[in-house]
Image (tube, rainbow, N blue to C red; front, top):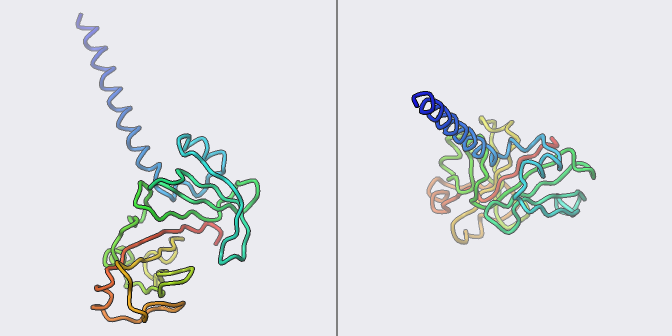
Length: 193
């Protein structure tokens, strides 16, 4: 009887440890840097529940035509992938803009505040104006995240005054920046640099 109890105890401990490893793996499943070296078939294998949508479209303000794949379309976990090649073997970039499960290993997520972004960068960031294709684009100014491959775009709470619009770095006082209540609104990781 003792042998049976010992065997049962070992099986229970093993099952618990396997469950813990599976959970840890699932959290990294939604870390976008982990996808960067995957091919389309790798993505299909690793994200079987993603309901993939595929196609071809124009990007970079209409200057580049590339194939794309969308994971989890129409949900908070939606992730757009554009490819460097028609066979979908090399990712060009990944982008997401919903506060779902996706995150960056840098700690940046959708909703990260301007203040926290500066802390993560170790240096004050600058940002471009709103109302154009690269609205709210962040310049890392040589900080820790400069070579991360991340392109982060800030969004203001509400409608900002006219002086905060346009294709230029915004010059604003700390009080004006605080009033904008800036948060990360979208993230792109570029692998074709």
